[in-house]
Structures are given as structure tokens and as C-alpha cells.
Image 1: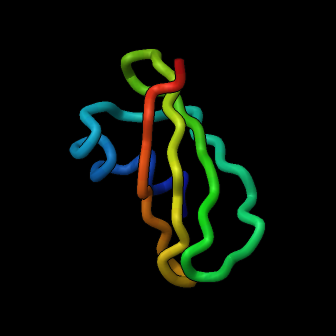
Image 2 (image 1 turned 135 degrees about the vertical axis):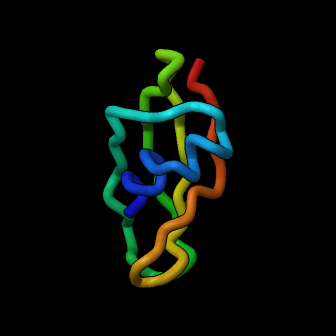
Length: 69
């Protein structure tokens, strides 16, 4: 779900870039509120780091992102 959120139109609209090569770590828990990290490559060729939070059994929200230096 996090990969879909990062690669989707909402992330592109909010952040201003489209993303590919999306990779997420496996969350240590699937409980609501658990967080985990993802990385992706933007259409600007920069690598981005994302923090994803499990919002429900069927929804993940991207709660933070930054360009990896």
C-alpha cells in the first residue's frame, strides 16, 4: 500500500515529482500507528526517503519525506 501511495498521483501532486524504483522495509508490526521507511527515485533523479504510517488494515499514509543527501 505504501508503494502504491508513493507512486500515485497524490504524491506527485503534493511533492511535485513522480516516483519509481520504490522500495519499502517490512513493518515490524501491522498495528495501526506503526511506522516504517521507504525509498524511491524521483523524476529529478534524486533519491527520496519516506516515512509511512499504517492508518488502518487497508490504508497506509505517507507522513514525511525528504531528499537523501
